[in-house]
Length: 307
Image (cartoon, rainbow, N blue to C red; front, top):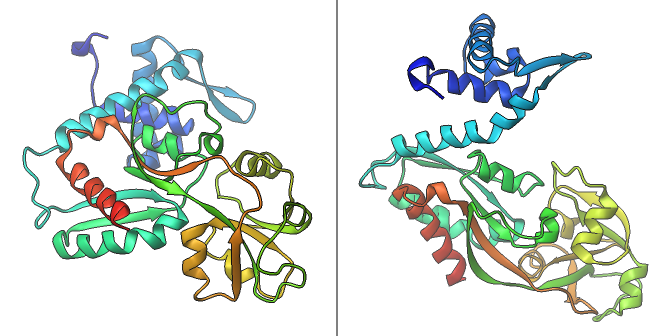
């Protein structure tokens, strides 16, 4: 690429067009008018000598050249942003900044109250947006739409054989799973057999944003064929939905123990061995030199390990 012939401001428009695949939505994404975005697209087409976006039926699709630009353009913008945004020093007491954190339900209850106490005390200008886990969690870290993930390391959950080399991972602790039922369950006493577990109707946390069929997600997480009768988008509400039913749920032990103080449930060990699951913190390597990011992730790691 000959930079003297390319307006680097067009990178922002190009990134928006490649991801939205729609001129109007791309314009809205970067807060410019539709005619301005159309003009940018024409300049980009001339420079790359390629249409980049073409109409297929009622939709717009990327050309092969457009597809090849998606990740390099996004990565270039993120690196520029990180370079310009990184300060040689970081004062949490004066900085104004927003972080997006993707946090498991268990860690929301167990870790985040301690994190928020420190942030509100030490860094009043920092905002944190906490989101639930979804199928797009790792891609959001890759594309810079989220800063950090605190949750399970299950590759099966992500449908991967290995984590991308662009991500940094810190191991925190083992996560133990338990079964939970209503305190007045008609057939389950203080323990449960594997036969009972498999025969009972289950309520299952099915995160929003998952495109996998429910049956496949259940198989990945439980490695068993269970009878799912109800789903929720998270885990926090499940203990409150068990009361007076024959439903059973599989939950992280710490989360179940905390919510058993509020919901009429009883918890017990699972009647079979499960693959080891661990809680981890994951972020993209581009954030390594950012002192603000390092400050926040150290707070999170310290809080998680203390508990």
